[in-house]
Image (spheres, rainbow, N blue to C red):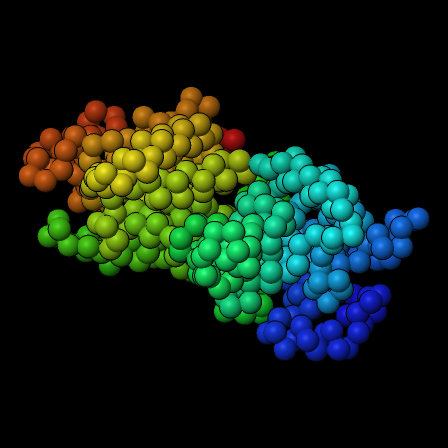
Length: 464
């Protein structure tokens, strides 16, 4: 791999300034993301020809490997022209997108840029359009991941929003369409860059950021971990890694996870971590809509996507934010044929004027569509409450497809009914009554949950 100083236009002073901001250089970031010695760079000295200003600097692009699996990458280089975009810069990114799509391999964008170069004029706008079109062509075919590691402003901000996953670095990364100065001038609102588009804002409020990390090192380390869960493409199959966790393992502690008091909460993440291989769960969107949990794990070495109501937050009810978060995740899993495991404890929907006016029906409809259209294998486990429409939308058998694979289990503590409260304790709400109607395939012991999920997924693989 080329050293940072080998790139034209980069000098020690620029690198020192980058480090003083608490940021690594683009080449240092690529070196940490990819396996040592695997990076192959293209268009190192791109030249537009007649326009000496239109060189290919400001971005580094190529391919390499993460734990031996092919990955394409482009990294905005803030030490060269502030990482700002011109036509040649845009062409390098578009070429990386085309190559990744042709190779059916994931693509990662590392963003640290001041936006577009003023001297590039309308050519910069054309370049952005080509990049946006590249995201659209790749959507649902290869995983696209963005990591914001510095400024990402103006038209640059739209690019990460078109990708599957977006991660940010706290304190040093900012994403916004119009910056604080413009907001102050036009809207007469005094706001800092952090308040306007910092990592915590996008993780907790807008939902654009899936996870935020303390520094560049941690962000790149966790990005490598995420890639291990993702298929290379929509036709590549889920990645499988050696597992040291017994697929037959049972956990008796789950038999008492659900409290006897129906109003008492329990942590659904405990169930998830005790179910997946080695307790390794990569949560997506952990800071927003915390009443639903989404993320990746493995069962018997194969990647799965997990969706779960979280009783510790709003009693696990569905609201518009939770429905939107879950629907987006289910759609991703379905595009890439990642099995979807759903843990249900949903007492209903969050009532209120804000929810109804905020589009609750529309967002829940998106969740219904995501589950109903999904042909990826689905395994659903009802642990406690499954009341009213919330029962139907959370991966029920009624949303299964003829060409899909859907298995539904329930714990003995499950209650499936039209309404909750007192009625939820009636005999008609028992999981055995639902099983008698064919709505539940089997009532299982909580401690056997991991094994039963593994059995169901193994049956799916045998039938493919």
